[in-house]
Amino acid sequence: MADLKKMYKTIMDDDFPEQISVGFGDMTLVYRKRTWKIADEKTGELIEKGLRYGENPDQQAALYELITGNLSLGACKYIEPGNGLVSRIDEEDMLQAGKHPGKTNLTDLDNALNILKFLGDSPAAAIMKHNNPSGVAHGKNVAEAYDKANMADRIAAFGGCLVVNRPMDKATAEMVNANYLEVVGAPDYEAGVFEILSKRKNLRIVRIDAISNLEKYRSTRFVDFKSLIDGGIIVQQSPVNRIRTKDDFLPAKTVYKGMEYAISRQPTEAEFDDMLFGWNVEQGITSNSVIYVKDGVTVGIGTGEQDRVGVAEIAVFKAYTKYADALCFKKFGIPYKTFELEAAQRKRDSTALREIDEATKRNKGGLIGATMVSDAFFPFRDGVDVGLKESIRAIVQPGGSERDFESIEACNEANPQVTMVYTGQRAFRH
Image 1 (cartoon, rainbow, N blue to C red):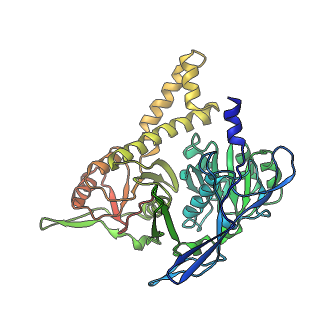
Image 2: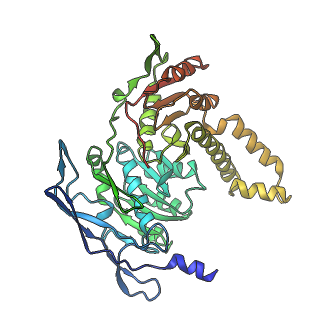
Image 3: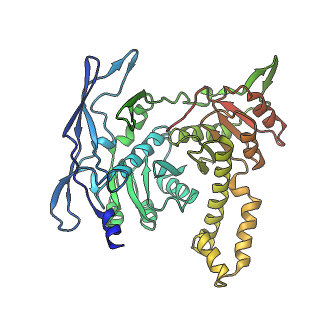
């Protein structure tokens, strides 16, 4: 067992070159490997290393920053050198290296920024776990945004990566310090914040000042590489989210066998706000996915499933589970599962557990009035019906299914009626 624990503490050397050049016809992109001088965990001496390891401790990995080359293909001009975010992090930005960053730490940072680049209008927090958000929220300030994002899925947030889009203050730092996170990222840290966060010696504390200007990355494409097991690669453009304001949504309507179908109830302003928020969060979630959001907070997140009905049901299950846990934690200061175990052992009153379960069922896991967001169209109405059963108020989906009329009918038949809009684009992410 000691050897197994040692495995996760190892910082691997890597044999990747200091520089990589990629040719696109007569154009060349040049990438430089990023390393840091960080104190050795055992001796305290400064050592120069790149990534701790890859996705697993036995995988070498390296981080590269684009330093030369302006790629232009057709009418698309891709991101240029000098716009680094995570790939530009240097020793000054790595305020505390913690256990030394690995590949997953930095991809979590990157995907949090991919979500937050759409949420710059107000303070927001994204907590990532295995390159998917466990909780995302707006708030009146950073502390409120973090608290909401954390309580959206307090269990999954354990050991996660938090990124906020405003300088972190002491109130937020105190809440962060009371939990266990692997990484914290912010555009800056107010006076006294580092002293609070650094009490967690293994915490990686990163400053990314460009977060203050994330909006410019909304429309900039980069080249996305996917390596195959045979050594081949697939190259694609990164996606661009076409939805910027409520006016970019399309009315939910269709024609089927000569009959016109249209959604009866139009969204309210509050519903439009959640539709925008939910679709923006959806840009950073692994497909197939369905999520539920309410009042600028994620309620249930379903990711990476093979069928749309199943992922909608999983998101509901998670909403109920997290809602019950939040109720238990706020009232008793312990997780629901711990309370459940102790109640079974007759160490706690099982009546309180039943009261939590009843409140969770009565409030439908916080899903009443929520907005359902799907990264692809619903091929049948069964996926929509999953959300309607939980008393959602609105749906966002790309549209374009042959049977869109079924989803429209389902919304119009609901009591009270549910509104729906189309995005006109899919948001698959694999």
